[in-house]
Image 1 (cartoon, rainbow, N blue to C red):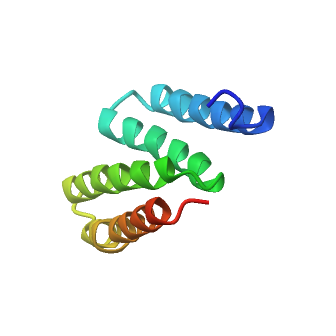
Image 2: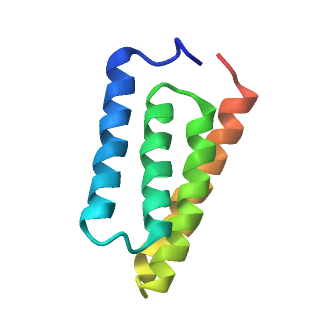
Length: 102
């Protein structure tokens, strides 16, 4: 995994994670579940950009967490979108990527 990401990609991911963390701290550090979901989300994007199935697995976890967060704030449309569309599509993509490796 050491050579999987370019230095630019590692810096991009690192800066994203740092900005998420700083935002979490700056706005009071409430909503730890949202913080964890954001870190998982940005990590899944970097893996998806490289065509790694780990990204789709992380997107499934992110969708579940975001569904819980959306439900807790009564954002039912967001919950339905992530649990009814994004999560199943990530699962289908994961299965497809695992069945058809490069």
